[in-house]
Every structure is written in C-alpha cells, then in structure tokens.
Amino acid sequence: MSDDPVYTPAQERVIATIGKDPAPHGAPLPSDLADELKADLETALVPFHDVLPDGKSYENRFFISKQALTDVHSCEAYFVDGRGDFEWNLANSRGTIVHKAIEVSIHTRGTINPTDLVEESISRLANDANKSIADFLVTLDEFSRAELVGDCSSLLTRFLEGFPGIKKQWYPQVESALTVNLAKGRVRVSGKVDLALGRPPDKVIIDLKTGSVFGAHRDDLRLYALLDLLSIGQSPRKVASFYIDSAEIHPEDITEGTLRSAAKRLESGLVRAIELKLHKATAERRPGSNCRWCVHLDSCEAGQAYMTQREEDEGW
Ligand code: SF4
Image 1 (cartoon, helix red, strand yellow):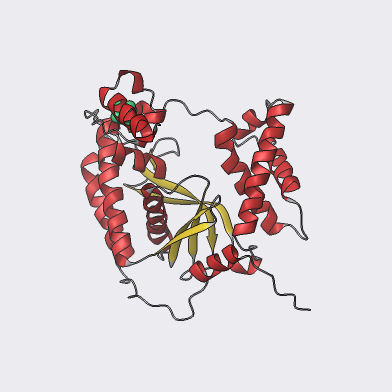
Image 2 (spheres, protein in one colour):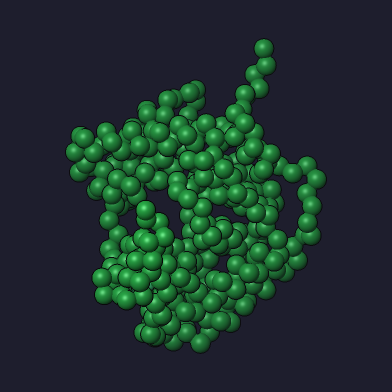
C-alpha cells in the first residue's frame, strides 16, 4: 500500500494552483528593481524628514501596516481615528488562534485532532505575556471559552480539509513578520504573513481568510510581495488568498508590473498618511465597508447615507 497522501479535490486544486511550477514562465525581474523602488520611496519621504520621529528608538518611528495603508486609501477620516481602540473579542481572536494551531500542527509529530490543537494554542497564547490576546483569553468564562474552542476547531478542520497537509520540506513559515525601514529608520512598514511556503525564488505567500472576497486582499498580498523584495531582494513567485469557508484559492503571479503598482500604492498611501497624522491635513470622507465599524458613523452624513443605501440594497 502506498504511503502517498490522499488529497481531497480541494487540496489537489491548491497544489495545482500554487505548487512548484516545473517550467516557470514570465519575464525575470530586473536585477536592480528592489534598489529602484526603494530609492523612489526614499525620495518621496525626503520632504517629511523634519516632521517624522527621529527613528532613534523602536517607538520613535512612524509605523504603517497593511491595514493602515488600506484604510488611508479608502476613508481618510477612518484612517485617522475612525477605528477606535482595538479590543479583542470572540470573533477577532479566532484568526490568531487558528493560525497558532496551524503552526503547531506543522511541527507536531503524529496526528493531533483539531480540538486538541486549538486547546493547546489557546493555552500557549494565554500564557504568552508578550501577546495582547493573553489578557482576553485568561478572563474568558467557561461558556465563552467553550464557544471559542468550538468555532476555532470547526475553522481548523475546514482548513485541514481544504488545504493540503503542510510538509516541513516546503519550508513553511507561519505568522512571519515582514518589515522595511525607510527614511533612516524614521518610517517602518510592516506586515505579518499568515503562511509562506517554499524558498526564494519559488516562495509563495498565502493569506488565510475566513470571510468574503475583498479587493483589498489582493492589495495586501502585493504589499507583502513588495516588502519581501525590498527586504531580502527577492519577491515571492506567487501570492494567494485561501478562503477557508469555501476552500477556494485565488492566486496571482508576481511580476514587475504588480511590484511597481504595489510600490506606487505604498508611496502615495505613506505620503498621505504622514500628511494626515503629522501635518494634520483635512481628512477626506469616503464611505465604504469601513462605515460599519467607524466611530464617526453617528455624526457622518456620507457614512449614514451609504449605510442606508446598503441596507436598502441588502434588505427584503
Ligand atoms: S462613517 Fe464612513 S465615510 Fe464617515 S468617516 Fe467613517 S468610514 Fe468615513
């Protein structure tokens, strides 16, 4: 009897979509692309050196994440202060726990059932004083904890059914940080990759998603590809969003064009973010999906009109 793994059709689809390409096609990237794109970003930041923090310590930097970059390109008022203070809850903690469980599953010998993996992940995160989620997890009552374990176990099971078992030979990286420092350390662009497989130049970066398909998901992945190029000098071969609920994978080949467009988006977003936060420029309001969570919604006419229209479109 063969020891080869038996894959579900969904798992076979993932392998066919992002697996190693024996005959890579597409033009190779110019060898000086990383230097060129980084130089353009540096040039765009020169006018702001005087207002930026001096970058002499970790805290003394202007930080921008993939989420902040998406926000500044959608609604500027939401980017400035519309998000409110972040608080952990049952819904937003699921991703962190399931990612941890996936990480543990790659490095454990033998088979552990999803509920045990989730229990172990919750215990580890709850005991990690460096993680802000710890305070939330240790205060959960028994009922809420059981609910969280149930939700995360279902999600993890779904992931394991749709995504092929990850082998150590694929050089998996889970929740790995990507960072680029600019303007002599005054600016830090950072992201955290859910899953990366393979070694450069065959690397594939994958974001694991629990909801619907959004255009911003593709922008996030292009940003990761750009950060990889700017930091290690080599971009991934491909990026992909894997939607756990539907077991669908949406890939994109990384080309010179995608990297140039990601660099332009980063540059314009970064400049605008600095103008808004440090120059106190007037923030433009652009209604969209963020209105649902925005602390300004009650007093924002544009947001209210958008939500009313949305309810009419989605209602009975
Ligand atoms: S309610 Fe909508 S349009 Fe108004 S500030 Fe918030 S996100 Fe922007």
